[in-house]
Image (cartoon, rainbow, N blue to C red):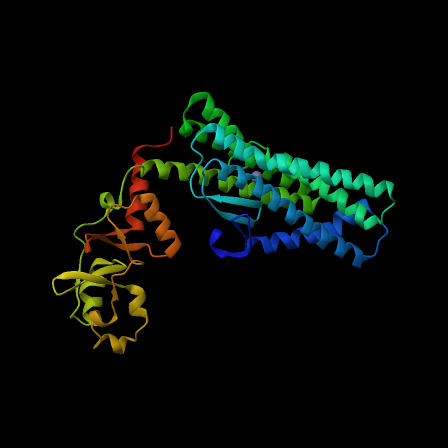
Length: 377
Ligand SMILES: [Zn+2]
């Protein structure tokens, strides 16, 4: 989900980006404000005015969410957690943390900072609304301020729903973690409670859809589905993290991969190696040592006619920092590297020598085996 994002600006050292899903949400926000919220609470204005109010309201919402996320990020940074940046996406925003909080207290304070900021914003806009009312300001101004006060209160309340990984879920987890001193147990309980909430929210959405409130219902279903997948994902993430704790690339590499000599043709490579072993990447041996790799993708760049005379050594990719990784790298960092570069198969290097290969597939199979043999209690 975080792959299709676009950087917007930098503030206080944090890069603010938007996810592609925000386009859809922005449209939904403007649309539901102009078509439903403003006309029903502030009737009698022109269609054009409602659209302008919708856009202004959406911009106000956008700024409010950024302030909410900045509060999380500033507290997190205060506790020494690295923040990669802030990304606005479907359910609002996320402050992307590089590491997880390491004490219940830091998690609690970091999580609660967002809803507190939204709550303060709500009071702030409510104050402006009162002033605008007494000064008899134009209806659109009053309407937008009233909307921003309400929406910030809703953001604060919604985020305090104890459905991990929302702020409320994190608050809940930090309290559970503090009580028993066990983050694994705390995550498990918080995730279960979150799944329950997600199901209830999706169900409420369907009831609204069946009833008369189709736009409202759609929101409930969107939010519920997001919570459902996110709750599952955060628990799995913890399991994966625990499974790989303290392990390095060396543990999982294949020290004796099937290698291909550089002097054979692509056609010979396809017949003798590719169709025989079905791997997607093979290290290439040149002058007695592994010096590069060849993948299925590289074959696709050439015609079948060219396969007959081109040599593996001519099309292979030389070993370089982007396609290789040091043997003592932690699995966590290896997964990050695979995720960021898109290369799911890497050459493993030790003392400037290729000593094996590591693949995402092997890591995933290990996790699958572990989950089969050590099921979640
Ligand atoms: Zn938050």
